[in-house]
Image (cartoon, helix red, strand yellow):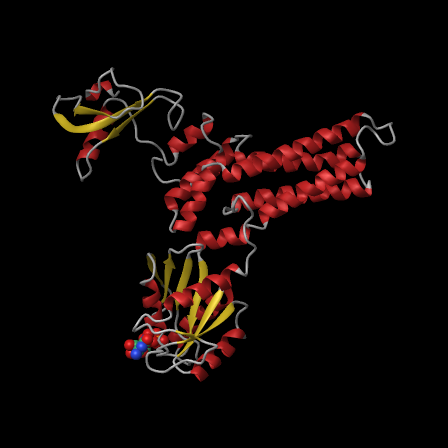
Length: 414
Ligand code: GDP
């Protein structure tokens, strides 16, 4: 196919070469492009691949693509390259998901976690857990093979302790789910306070402190505005909503209900006011409606000085913004357990479900084993299902169903 476009047979493997690409139909020059040949199996998909790096713009890529199709190629399906890489054993299913996460990442922290997963961080943990289940099954097999021996070759306490360790290791990985969610979605930080407290100004001033993606949330004429602040260690999802005051205006009421929903879901609420008594009043009203950490934020400190127990900010002059952001980070981090040494977090629902299932299965095995409620071969069935859950995560059992679920949401091509 590549030959039809004028690519010579003499390319050096994995080295980019400048090639005059010609239209196979009429031999006109389409572009001078860098072409790289990856002989199988050392390519992204594990198959033989030829990559064209053509010039950008509106026409060139489309024209080269059309020439490829005329020569017998077809456009890739969503996620097709990565799917082929999984099928050919170049990466496991969790790494393939990490490719999608890498492409979709909206913040540095999320992108960092995706790279970590692509590097095999999470798969290594899951493989190690699966290995632990296999070892436990092997220990149990001895016991099942020698049932007539009272103690058997394996002390029952050894099996109990191995299963306990396995359950705890699964629990440790699951305990990263809240932190993973915060990295994925951003910690929800809501600005609250009376009209004219300076909330919108503060919102905009905070946006200026980091790269941000701003979206307006429709539903009311007084839409909430959200911004995802790209910050480490955690992205922040900052929300400016209609105020908290009571109103008879039905449209405004909608906005207020939306604020209440945000308040319920928030990790941090900034109780804003330009006077200490406003801040206090807002903080009290907010505390009734949320379990979030409530930070007292005295706005417009260029006009009026704040009491020492409040965070003083001036959107006008930029005073106190860094201190406010640090206080927000600290409030959020103190709410979720810190990740352990290898800093791997569980971010995807598919992973959470499978790990929870495996955790429950191991617990059920332990219950059955320690109470001797079930014969060992029956108790062992729980370990088999735990192992299957973990295998399905990495794609050791690569059923098409699992592949379809994983690649459904991929962008076209990759
Ligand atoms: P919101 O209704 O709570 O969103 O309040 P706004 O952000 O719209 O601010 C209300 C008024 O206060 C506007 O006229 C702003 O210019 C002013 N304002 C906001 N922040 C500051 C500040 O830090 N210093 C000063 N001097 N004025 C501010």
